[in-house]
Image (cartoon, rainbow, N blue to C red; front, side, top):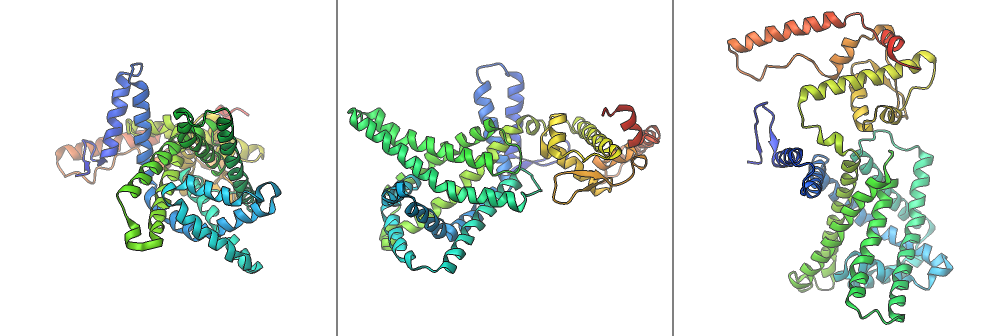
Amino acid sequence: MGSERPANGVRRTRLERLKARLRNDGSRRERGLLAVPRYVAYLFVETLHQFNQDKGWSRSAALAYEFTVALVPLFLISFTFFAATPGLATYQDKIQAFVLEHLLPSSADVLSRHFDAFRVNAQAISIVGFLVLTFTAVALLVTVESVINDIWKVPVRRTLASRTLAISSAIVWGPVLIGFSYYLSLRFKEFADRDGFLHLEVVEFATRYVVPFVITSAAFTLIYFTFPNAKVKLRSAAGGALMGALLWEGSKHVFDIYFRHVVTYNVIFGSLGAVPVFLTWIYLSWSILIFGVEATFVMQNFHDLSQRDLNETRARGARAYLAARCTMAIGRAFGTGAEPPSVGDLSERFRVPEYAVREELEKLQQCGLLVKIDGEDRFSLGRAPDRIELCDLLEAIGPARPDLTEFGDDEAKVYFEKLFGTLESQRRETLTGITLDRLVNDLEKP
C-alpha cells in the first residue's frame, strides 16, 4: 500500500511520489507565487526522505538512551564548571532552573528537585568516579559526531588530536554558552522591567517564545556547522538550525500542553511522574536534532539531490564524466609525484558535492582502479596510468548493457538483448586503447 511500481519496474514510496509531484509542479511554475512555498515543501519532504533512509528514528532512540546514561555526568561536569567560575558560582540554582525550564517547562520543578539532591550527593564522589563520569559524557559526544558524519557521508573521521580539541571545546564552551544565554535572558527581562514594558503582551511573547527560539537556533547552528568533518556552509547550517528550532520550540510547547492537560502520570507514578515525560521528550528532541542535520545536508546539496530522480541514462553519463575527470586529476598528480587531490579539492574543482565525488571514487576503488589512502579522504591510482583504460572506468560506474533478467522471455527480449550486445561490442571497440595516460597527456592541464 505504501509504494507503487512504475513503468521502469522500480518501486517508489509515497514520499518519492510526493517529491516527484512537487518537482514537476515547480518546473511548470518556477517563477510563480507558489515557488517559495513549493521549495519549502520540497525541502521538507526531501529532508524527511533522507531522515527515513538514514534510519533517523533508530539513531534518535540510540542517542536518547546514551544521553540518559550520560545526563548525570554532563550535569556534574557543567555545574562543576559553574562552581569553579567566580562570575557564575552564585547563579547555579538559577541557571539550573533556566535550563530545565527551557528544556521542558512542565517537568522543570520536579526534575530540579532530583538534580538538587544529586548535586549534594555528588560532592562525595572520588577522582576515579569523576573520570568515569567524564568518559561517559565524552562517549556521548563521540557518538553524536559519528552519527552526524554518517549523515554527511564522511567516512574519514577526525584525527585523535582534532577530535580531542573539538570534544573538549564542547565540554568547556557548552556551560559557557548556557551561562551566556541565561545572562542575555536575564538582562532582557531587567531592561523590560526597568522601562515598564514587562507587562506588555509583545514583551511577554518575546520572553516566552522569541528568546528561547533564538537561543535554540544559535545552539543548533553551532552543532550543525562544527560537528561534521566536512565543509559546511554557514548558510546551510543556519537554515537547518532554523528548521530544527521551529520544530523543537513548537514541539516543546505542544508537548508541554499535552502533558499538562491530557496525561496525568503523577496519578500513576507519584513523584516520579516527570520521569517518563522527560524520557519521551529526550527521544523527541534527538529526533528533531537529527532531522535538522538532515535539513542542513539537503540544503547544501539541494540541486544534486533534486536531480537524482531524473532520467537514469543522463545521470549515468554525468557520473561517468565525473569519475573520468576525477581519475584524470589523480593521474596528473601521480605523474608529477604530487600529493593526490582530496575529495574536497575535487568537489570544489568540479562543483559537485563531496559525497557525489566519493561515491564514484569508491566504485573505482572496488574495481581495483584506485586505492584509498589510509586515514585521509584521498585516493591514488591502483594501477599504472597506461594500464587503466577508459572502458574500464565506464564499466566500473555501471554496465552500459541493461540487465533484462527480471523480464519474461519472449521474441522481443531476445531481439533487444542481441541489439544491446552489439552496441556494447561497438562501444568497447571504440574505447579500446584510450588509456588514462593518454587522457592525462592530451586533456588534463597541470
